Length: 225
Ligand SMILES: Nc1ncnc2c1ncn2[C@@H]1O[C@H](COP(=O)(O)OP(=O)(O)OP(=O)(O)O)[C@@H](O)[C@H]1O
Image (tube, rainbow, N blue to C red; front, side, top):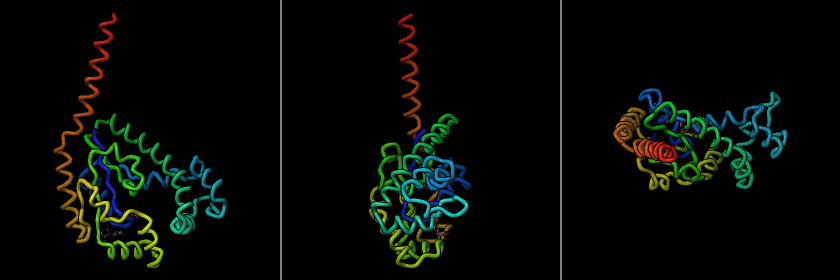
């Protein structure tokens, strides 16, 4: 099995692309955002640490995390953003590794990891064989973000600027999906990339490596007996 890192900028279209990979092309996808929401549910370790670090004011009366308020705090304060990332990222990575292991056991050829900050944190970069960046122009990103999250231009800009510029991410990518046009345009690009991934033989490297290791262990045992 090999891993594919899918990334982009905020509201550049990662979820839209992931849905095409997952629902239409039946590829296995793991979404870091969904895991990030699960690890801050009441009762989880990260939830407790956020309450200890940021206080009760970032929680709603029903005990759920007040994402809007926390978002306002961290997108304007780099120190606090780092604090929050230091709590949430390790929990997300642990859960992600567990899900990847399950996919490996189930025999998938490849798994797509939707990781918004793949190039910023670099933690999972050494483990992905290919990277896919979902790109759109900055004015489209701004408009889509303002519309989807009902944000002012200033707030949307602050969120976009907190990430590495999309043009920089494109330079680092194996494949770039240009999401400036219609969803149909994007769908066709996703299909092309899916065919390329299916044609890749990278999954064989790990399989051959594991088989060799297994053969060596068996030979070693027979030698000892
Ligand atoms: N090609 C497109 N044309 C028009 N609207 C689009 C297109 N692609 C995505 N959108 C819209 O832009 C918004 C952002 O898209 P999406 O949620 O897929 O981005 P994202 O990168 O996953 O966002 P986030 O970083 O916040 O998770 C959504 O409202 C989506 O419907």
